[in-house]
Each structure stands twice: as C-alpha cells, then as structure tokens.
Length: 167
Image 1: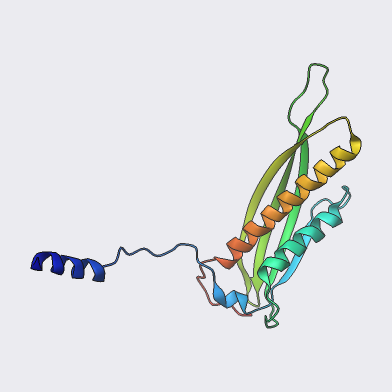
Image 2: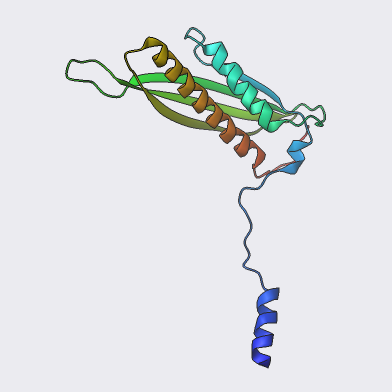
C-alpha cells in the first residue's frame, strides 16, 4: 500500500514535458494590426472584390476593438487561377477548379517578422442555368478566401518569436 501511495505521489509531480508548438501570442492581440491585401492581377474580374473580402475576414479575426495603435502591418498578395478539371466526350467542361495563392509578410518597425505562402483550392460544377453557375463560382471564391484568411490569422497569431516585436 505504501509503495502504491509513493508511486501515485511521484507520478503526480512528474510531468510529460509537453509544450505546445503553436500557441496564441496574446501580446499581438493588444495591438491594432494594419491589413493590406492586394491582388497580383488587377485586370481580372472581381480582383478588387476578392481583396476586399479577404481584408474584411482578416480584420475580423486579428483585431480587437480595444487594441492600441501600432505600426504592425500584414501585407497579403493574392493570386487566382481557374482551370477546367475534366472534359466530356464532346470536349465540353462541366467542372472547374479555383486555386488561390496568398503570399503574406508581417512587419513591425524593425522589418519583417515572418512571411509565408499558402495555397487553397476548391471546385464547382457547371450546370444549364447560368445564374446558378455564377453563384456557385462566387460562393467557391468566398469560401476559399475565408479559409485562407483564417489560416493566415492562425499562422500570424501563433508565430514563435525569435526576436522582440517593436509595435
């Protein structure tokens, strides 16, 4: 019985050494982060709309209302590619894939803190109704942009700081 009691005490004081790799950096939440989203191709349809949608999603997730002003800045450059996934026997396409690539850089007063590149893709089906096709394409675009923005926010908020941040 005494051995069991000693074993339980030793087991309760020892730890497994687990330390999370990615944890939310609470210090960044105290500062307002300026978000700039630009599209690589300015002449494609909805380029400005895509940038505005992504900027809105990032700002909703990264800034609090009680944040202090700072010089922290997140610059995101997005690129869109659309291609057909398959051909029918009559050489028509019934399914398209949409791929977004986001290059991001996070800055403070001293320079770049972190940078990276993310890719997301999805697809949509074409039907006989042209309005339904437009809605499906727009919905696919918005879902990809929302997912990309959430991943960027999670990566920014969980960075392992190797140097001090100068807001």
